[in-house]
Length: 220
Image 1: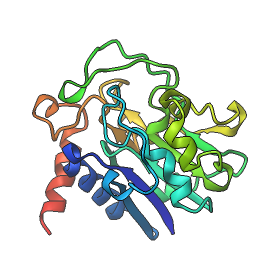
Image 2: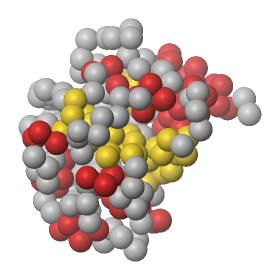
Image 3: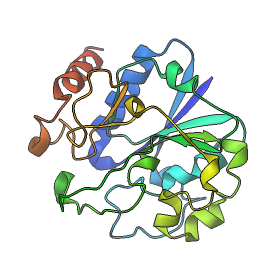
Image 4: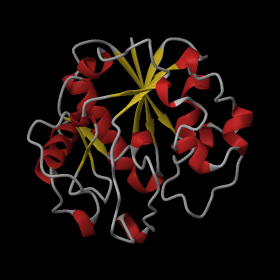
């Protein structure tokens, strides 16, 4: 069973639903998809929201190993994504040599705002944490106490690990739409600047693919 946790923001609820649909529709093996809703995490996530956080799930992703009882592997994805290939192919990339596996972007944004006018912040390892394969037993440092008190950048930059514990995924498993050159072979696209579900970014890259998925989901 593949366990996939997806960040959830009430402003992007349709994004969560379409991503979940795209995963289930393409998966060749059983998977369990769970949204990380803040109202369901009150017992373990108590830190106040930092005004620099552009989404509700900025911190909740780091509770995934604890939610999985520090056992097996789990996948985390931001909600503003779309799966274009079988998630079992991502699952097959698990490597027990590492505590986490991510696409190691060198993303240095030049824009100052992104979706819904949210501020854009530049920092090393930006977007590394937007899609993560967690080797849960090797992420025991991510206790609720630590996640509730650690500086946000310590979490997102994986400072709770040695660099050698961070494995690298192929870039096609977290393609940054309209940030990187268009990749027709992208397996998981990430609308990090805003997706087609926002009026301001309705004509972004991979918008047709998202709308097609939404149309399929809406048929049922």
